Length: 347
Image 1 (cartoon, helix red, strand yellow):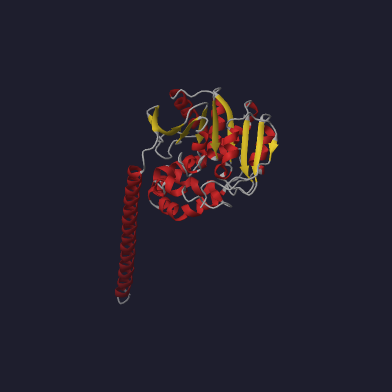
Image 2 (cartoon, one colour):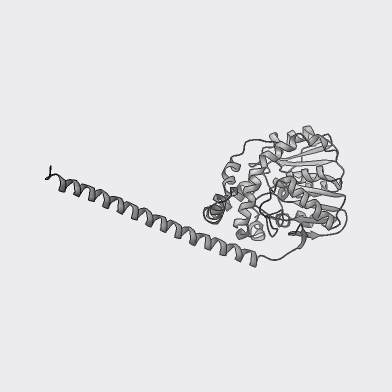
């Protein structure tokens, strides 16, 4: 038995050495990964600060509950309020030409919704469409805006609906490419992890901005398809502003709230008594026209529906004249098929 002992000791020593090497390798890999994540986070934070510093300070700010809200204002006359969707910010309405077109006859105010553009998004608060509508209602009161036409595009349409249900000062709704009923969304599952506390913070400063940079052009192309992306779109909105951690957080949280928000609104549509103009592209790859626009029109007594042939999600670019006209006319309460025009500013 004594002669076996050296071999036993040798085997034990070899296993111990192997475990030690494995542990050292794991520690080294962890250290390298941590260093890489740290460098990435630092680079992302630097690019975000630089983007915000270099972005033109167009517009003005209104302070609501201690939070500055940026808005663009043009023109005079009966007010029209513009609420943008996800991914973008208020400059989307400048790039489309809609803000300037409406400003020929109206006082037009386009807000950066909370977390987008240059508007803050306080932590510890659930920024549902209802919460955003409450904030906007206070902002509009501060600016002296009453009896307004409110236009919401995409996710902004949920906020516009909530604002109309909360306030008697909304005269008319214009809903463009909106999501109105709880239907399954793959993009919600993909975007939502960046909204999770702690884990989301790590993602927003490491993986998510890199993915956003790599996929932004494809995402924007899908939003505009089948029309090409306007040549002024990304320069006007700033690619760097769209991939900041703060805006990724806002996008992710809004995506997470989208389905439950639509579910909560479904039973309240009957309370809407004001005129509503609904616009949707029949080639929209983001929101299905039948499941949302046509269904909402069927449920609203005072609505008109404009289905735009061969138009995608960014319908306010393709149907600029039709949407601008809807802000000034009274709802006629019947379905219309509007002919798509060549979008202004297209490349």
